[in-house]
Every structure is written in structure tokens, then in C-alpha cells.
Image (tube, rainbow, N blue to C red):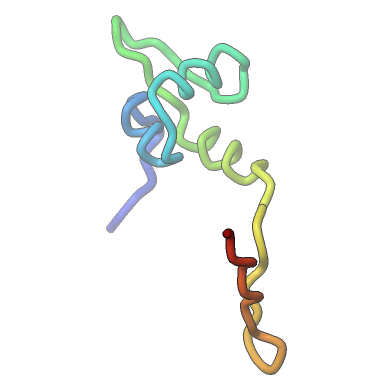
Length: 78
């Protein structure tokens, strides 16, 4: 039976969010991610990683399907 982890290493949290280890440290310092210490190890709360990801804005064009689905050609550079 698969289960969700309680915590991630900073390296695993960085991989989950596709950011650098330094970005994870900055997010912890800014109190945007919850972290705990176990001896020398830092443990990043898994639910706070998911919650932070949910707060990120969705950018870029939305994918359309059906009659109106098309891609506008980019202007050519000269």
C-alpha cells in the first residue's frame, strides 16, 4: 500500500518542485515551507511543499481542444 511521506530532504523537495536546493533554503527562510531539524538533517514537510505548489500561478496559454484549438504562428525574425 503506497503512502505519502511525512517529510522530504531538501534535495528531494527541490526535485519535487523542479527548483534548486538554494531556492528551497530561501523558501524555508521566508517561512513559505515548513521544515524541522533532526540532528544535522533538515526535513521539509511534504504537505507544505504541496501547499506551496498549489499557490503558484498558472501561466502561459491554456490548451484548447475542439474547433477553436489552434496555435498562432510566431512572427518571423529578419
